[in-house]
Length: 130
Length: 130
Image 1 (tube, rainbow over the protein chains, first blue to last red):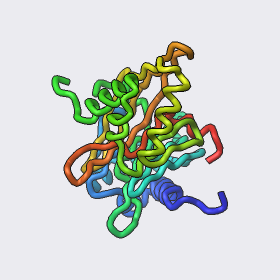
Image 2: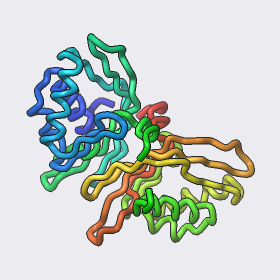
Image 3: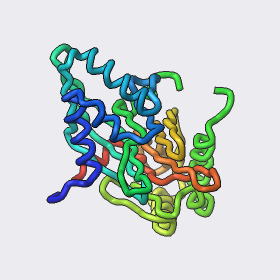
């Protein structure tokens, strides 16, 4: 692809902001009532809760978190898009893991894509009781 | 769970209708511009195309298709929901496969959930060029 999908650019911007601990930028990329899967079975809902979760995750990895996508496919229709991504999570104090991430984006009234559901664990969420 | 999520009921109804080749019922469960992944890299968009794809799939399996879900998790916010499911596809003329399916549902103005993105292949879509 010669030109990147706007959602791919957003995810790239989010990864950079997460790695730089720039949480204002991160939270701005979510809808007001977005759901973030912190770990299977544990969710943060809404921008303030997502911000607190991101801060806690950064602290857990002692500022060494390095998140990036190694390939993604975007399925889009109207104001809704599903992203299937291979997400690499590296950190100085933990083994590198690859996750099969699933993100849902919604387009707001101004035509801006925002992340509504952020589940970097993919089907691992099925391994805990619903 | 004592009570089933409305989306879980819809998926159960869709599976029954697919297995019974009741395509009117199947197509009614999708949004007007829904995307169905027929196989990684090949999509049907909109109700008429989805209906034709379903008919072709049923013919391919010579009427012996048996689709069911073996566990699912629903992540929901506002008018958008992401379903992660283990989908079992069996047929008299093909080996049974388990897929890690991903479905996105949207709520319409009348509060009715409809399938907007139907990707029963999950991350297998990443294995073909985007």
